[in-house]
Length: 168
Image (cartoon, rainbow, N blue to C red; front, side, top):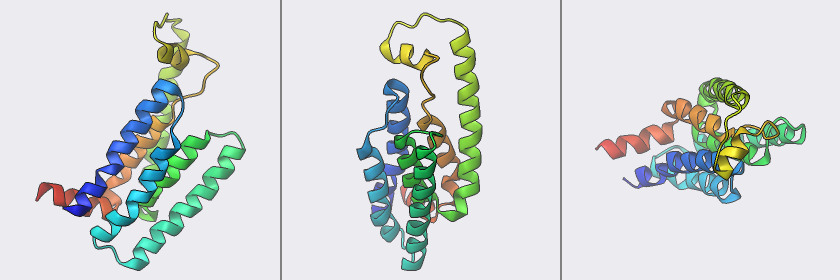
């Protein structure tokens, strides 16, 4: 039950990050911080061995370093880098291929949708829609990050244990 409560942070914060990124093209730092911080109590409550928790932490730190490099190269934003690293704590090394594949497919569909919508020369009335449809803006990649993380969630022993507690 306790693991289930902590595991709720995973989908709720990823959905919030995606929504906030769509509406403002930013992801608040507190989202990544809470997502990362909630992993430890969820992992302990789920009964993960300390060695496996250490592997998840090491993997998350490695992902953060890689993402920081990609941020430095201008591949994506700092908020995206932090959310990817925080979500990777939960998915772990076992979920990396599912996470990256889901994120890449969702990111491609997102980019294609934005290209089509931006070429349609729509006249949006809200500020967030104007920003979203502006050719000068990037893409709200937290949407793709959330999809990839949800795609990888079944490989996470923490999330599997937490979701099992919800159905019990």
